[in-house]
Image 1 (cartoon, rainbow, N blue to C red):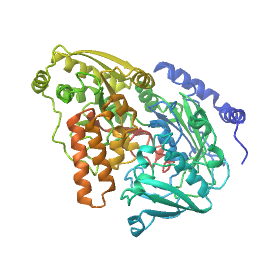
Image 2 (cartoon, rainbow, N blue to C red):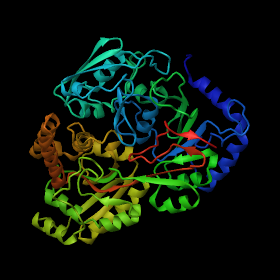
Image 3 (cartoon, rainbow, N blue to C red):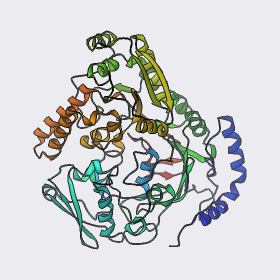
Image 4 (spheres, one colour):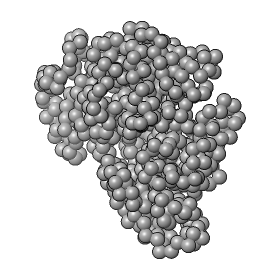
Length: 553
């Protein structure tokens, strides 16, 4: 396979799209009516009248969709920093040894040739044979060295990429047995090994080794073994994918080409999806207050209960927020019913645990922060806090920007003078990392985009390497060290009863301490034109899944 360069990508895009000039011009006018969209966000034309083989009236094999998150964060599979766009794309570009069903999360053999039997999972060593004939998008064969290289990056204790927190506690090393066989050496038998391994997307050693961090995180440089390959990437605007016809794995991709458009503005997503402008057939991140109007327009909208949260991160190293009574008071002070009604139209639930109720490991916490302004005032008085002035920093996601206004009103109402600072995610992260003098910040997060196993979900915020935990300053406390030990003991426990007891204890500590904790969990909604696109379902994490989708009109 010849190498795809930026030059021949542009030439191919020009040839493919030049016939659609009239459609593109019409789309430009349509976008102007609903606000300026990203560059080239509508450059894929609507369905042509003939298929690639020239059959008149046959459905097109091209699909154009919108993603409500930016694509300009890292695309490095072991160090994505949780980018919703990149991680959704990875499910189409890359494979793990064992991937998880996008809806049930049950593991299946992806790059591995088969699932191990139950007996094999009881030991500390797991032998995995790679699927015969698997190749990278550049045509090179997938070999055991690629698996070893991927886990060498993940387990590097000095560099500590994002995935280190999810693997360093239980996986010791990965060794090559022969060109198609590797052995995973665990520190102890880990009952959720297959589910956890779905997080580790395998990358090609021959293409990635020695490359800079800047190169690795660039969306243009992704080379996987999955059903789709990246053919074009424009930061802040779009990503284009083409079916990789040499893919021989368990998935059966039916779409030939896809364009994913960055459409952060909710009104633009709704307007373009309603009219199918530019062939826009699907979108994630459907605003709750637009569900009914979209359904009335004949668009299928589905939701899924999720861990997607509005979370508060307190600076526990700074007085008075170092006092857990102050943190608890500020949670109790929030009028959560009003917040959910205004921000998400009631499509969510008050957090009664760090995990959402749909999670198999959910356990209702002793501390549930239902609206109780009197208790909030009493806790502040008990802590000796008077005349508190607080700055609440927040990311500028549309629904969250609305939600923090309700939080401000609630805190103002109990005598806590609140100032809001709403900004871009990257800007807020930079401020918190560089200054370290914040009071509290509000984030939207959903660690179940990695997995639904509780240990991983907790470590997203509460691993020692978590940026949010480090920003909070709570990682240096004796209380955190106790929590970390409880989590590690639960992870290593082979006894199901003891495992649950320890996990429940950890969840109880997290709720009680309220350092990094959700105010609410919300449903996630996706929408699509079911008369043109079948095989779609709502995910309980951000993004879309099109590996089972089919264009039918």
